[in-house]
Amino acid sequence: MKNPSIGSKMKKQGESRCTQKTISLLSPLGTIQVSGCENGVHTIQILMDVAPAERSSEAPLSCVVTDSPAETSAEMQRCVEWLQAYFTEPQTAGSLPLPAFHHPALQGDAFTSRVLQVLLSDVKFGETVSYKRLAEMVGNPRAVRAVGGAMRRNPVPLLIPCHRVISSSGQSGPYMSGRGNHLKQWLLTHERQRGDG
Image (cartoon, rainbow, N blue to C red):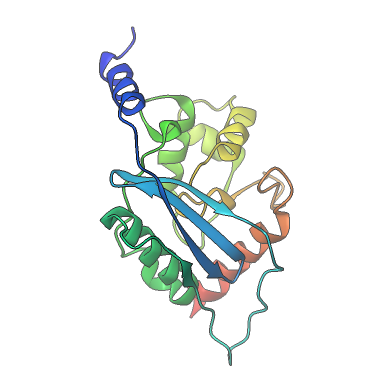
């Protein structure tokens, strides 16, 4: 039986035309673009325009806004604050509220949405989970490949930490369809090092 509220939510979102705005940040990973509207964050894109920053105890990491519309929604501002905390004081990011999400992949009860919600709520900063274990956590232990597909469709990486999902062998596994494997390794190391301090 189909849940009518899911269908109406999706239809309502499709009918309302969002006025999306984009904020660019210069982070240790390079440029990050956050797009969203007054209802929430739609997407986060890591542009991979530079090599990830080297870590040094002398030079703290930074994350600064480089381009922003004159007016941004509270949800977009909340996202910027969360990202800045994640890179500069990651131990505090977990206590900050996340912005609302406004993307179809995160609406309703579809498998991708369920996987991303479980990942967000159950896999904490500095932890990792295997694709297999995440499939078990959402109640479908045979859906390992589908979990991988859900990671590829994650519209808000970093906020929903798909970088924390690794292979059962302990290998980090692909990130951003394999193009961002070095970023995944950087993020996992960042969380391990910052989680200890």
